[in-house]
Each structure stands twice: as structure tokens, then as C-alpha cells.
Length: 192
Image 1 (cartoon, rainbow, N blue to C red):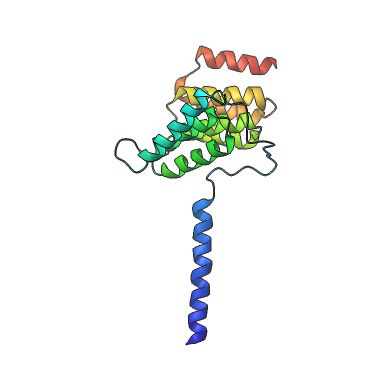
Image 2 (spheres, rainbow, N blue to C red):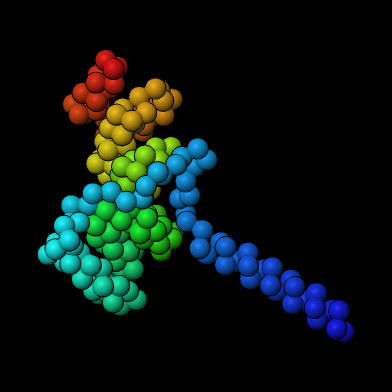
């Protein structure tokens, strides 16, 4: 009986560890080869004064709204991430976007994915940023801005990736037609 109990405890411990790892794993891990040299950058509110204090106070207020009926936790996590980005704290901004994505798993909205693309592009994790931008266009296909931002990112940061650029143009054109903005972007890319 003692051996069976130990074996059962061992199985429970392994299963608990596995479930814990799954719960803390970021839904958008950095792609192999992507490196963030520094998670910190010059945030617009990182002034050591009023703006910085305002952002920190807003983070505190937003955290107090979690699990309330006033806003969804998804909206709150995205908002907290935005405040950390204003402070130049890329790691916390990334982590809160991960929480938002996990919270939104059944709705699959694009805002947190889009914001992750913007943030990771800024931090130099371009392959991971590409995935985030693309997911925003997949989850909310009807949002023109996500398609446009994804194409701009590809043309500016990954202009040699013709496969994904053509795929992104095809997806946008299938939904929105051949708009003047898309035609201009295509021309800009082809000239480069």
C-alpha cells in the first residue's frame, strides 16, 4: 500500500507541475532566434515625475478593477500593458498582453495580438512580432488597421519575406478589395 501511495503522489506531483507550467507559459513565446537585448526602453511617461507617477497610479487602479463587472479582465490587462509601455517596461507590457490573450482565448480578438506585434517589433523580436501581427489579422479579419499595420511591418522590417508579404496582401485584398492604401503599399514594397 505504501508503494502505491508514493507512486500516486509522484503522478500527482508531475501532473501538477505540468499544469502549472502550462498556466504560466506565455501564449506568444519568443521564436527561436529572436532575442530581446533589453526589455526596457524610453517610455513616453518615464520622466521621474508627474507622468511616471500617473502611469503607476493608473496601473494600481486598473489592477483593482480585475474581476469586477465594470470592464472585462481582457480590457484591463490590455490597459495595464499600455501603461507599462508608457513607462518603457517592455517585460511587464509583454506579460500583461500574454494575460490578455489567455483571457480572450474563446473570443479571439485581435487587439492584444496587434499590440504584442507593435511591442515586439520595437524590442527587436521580429519573427515573434510577425506572428503576433498575423494573428491579429486572422482573429479580427474585418479590422482594416490590423492588416495595414501588418503589411507596413513586413515591408519595413522583413521586406525580403516575399512569401508572407504576398500572403498578407492577398488576405487584405480578399476582404477589402484593392484599396488605394494597399496599392500604394505594394508599390512601395516593389520599389524597395
